[in-house]
Length: 187
DNA sequence: GTACAGATTGAG
DNA sequence: TCAATCTGTACT
Image 1 (tube, rainbow, N blue to C red):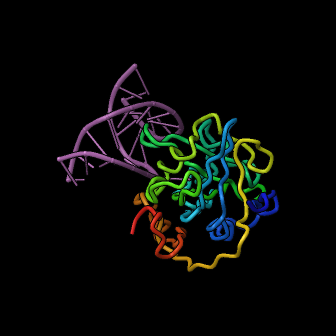
Image 2: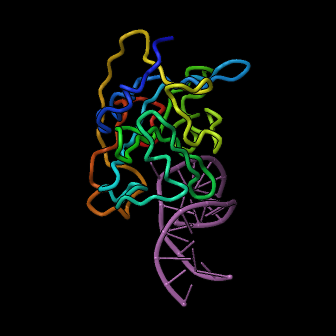
């Protein structure tokens, strides 16, 4: 595998990190074995100005406090009482993050649709509340890596999904995915 | 204390 | 198109 991503990567501009995350690998380590997925779809959330963000207006709650951590931490939460959503914090001080919406399963090599959606990503990686605030730079059970070989692909920009309440902010093209990739969540 | 919406998903 | 299912938030 490639090289682990450090603090420098995650503390860059959020929209930049959202695009750069495409094609990177998430490594989830267990006592026995690993699960590996390639990121193929992301969305950026730019609190406090972004109405779709949980940190809109500088709001701080017990649930979203992890969004304020320095870039490279996990902000994970339960949605609709059913599904976990994996976010990676970015920037230094601002409460901004990137939602990981879809992965291509690398190991185990599985159905390409097994992680095609934010809820499914967390099922695939076996993530839950215990990863709240986890530091991807230092953690021994989950981290990100660069691919070894150079890969090229086209990045598609689109409107974010499921935020109809966010007014003008729902029009922002802050969803990014690899063009024509079969593991992306929606067409 | 009570009501309600939500960064979803899979089945019909 | 709809139900499953629960937490944060804004009311009473």
